Image (cartoon, rainbow, N blue to C red; front, side, top):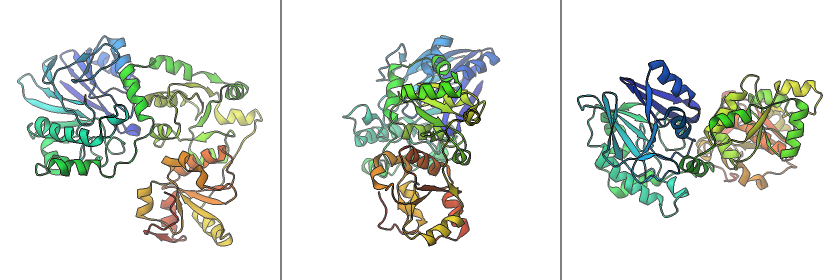
Length: 473
């Protein structure tokens, strides 16, 4: 028997591979499915089932491609209505995999079809619980995502369902069962997830607030629904792709891998109105980039930021990447439903420069230089693009807070005539912010290297933990 967690850090997502006696299952697979197929081939195993814990919002699952390529059966829990062939299991239904059995536990709350899968050995002993977004380590799934698809499912109704699911289906299970959730810290599917990606159910009963047996239904609902930030705009779109189906990942990759020389790249950009997405490091981007391109670095929180800042998942995209990373970028875009990459700049930005094409730059300065310039120019302002909670914790005195998450809603709050020094926590988000505004004609934004971490370390700029009235949000 093998149980393998396949964890993807940029999405804080855990898929699972289980194998016994030549039969295998994959739970909540990512969009690119060849690694699972290769894993099974290495074991001499046939993938029998693709188990989906629910219709995911934060990524597009690989269930359809995996089923087509292997002949595996897709499985959902009760009430699911997929737009493709799948087994909609009944509550308590048992699936056999080699010497193992997997019991379907319907646990509505995060979504109505949400289900957990209880793994048992040949003797019937429970070994592990694959909880999807129903139960995380230290948290439970947020109850406000399904209402984005079904209006009458309020977050309070879903939280009430989750209260019952936890108490009637999960808490009665044995303490030594290992909990295998679909997400860890960093995912937008919960509020307070642990960095740990597995734990015993017994320890979760002791430490997870949602499993406190003394919590009343009303207290649970209040705790679960307070402090929820709006979900990323692409979440409902991903849900519908997971329900209805999508293009094969092979088709998406073939289209996105189209290599374009500088002349061809420029022509396609002009003809299509595609977004020019530059995925290089922030400081490398600042030194030179194609005019009107935006920077979202591949080595940061790439996919979630693309989802938050490019509203239309059908938007055509042209890529500027580090050499050799083109397919990686196309794949990671497809993971969150951005299937319309139509090519990349062959030879990277260096080829654009060598062709004598126009380039642009963003000034990026040290904290000390920012302090000097602020002293010389009292009219200049500091823009803090971190989340509001980060800003409230501690910030530069008199800085304005415009969280990157809401940039498209607050462009009118920023003057093209005023000079701004822009920072985030470490420099990743501020360059995204600056590049988006630069493409919209804001030429007086200056990036602060190292972000708030460097500001605190330098002790040259006054910092306060009081939320001043200049906050824009």
